[in-house]
Length: 189
Image (cartoon, rainbow, N blue to C red; front, side, top):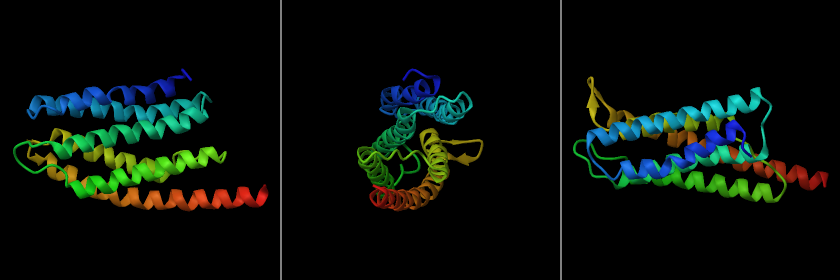
């Protein structure tokens, strides 16, 4: 359990209360601190998988913990962002956040059902692209304000739209993969 990759995933979960606390403030300093913290936590997503494969410490717990940490971190940030009322551009559209959160819940439930059936569904490549787009979107939405001529809120909403498309697409792929694996298991069993 206490491998470095799993500790990095647990770190991503542990920063969620701090991130939520920072998002109760609408000032630029809190926004930048929340964005930096989110960016730091997002970078650990790359390292946990890399280290697990490199040191051959890939575990079933890690296969579940890694994507769960990503989902919890992104969903917590998006929900808080939707509820915020900061000056300037509006926060991300609620309907877009609902699409992303619904996908995350559906895939998490599917993974739980798969696990009960003895099938471990680890994160796929498309899921990594989805998380990367979500991380860029959430980072930009956390920054929110314009700096060096870049309207981070607009950039964030743009990347969130891209992330939603990839999220739905990968969610459908997870379901198709699950039913194929289940069918194969039924035929083999």
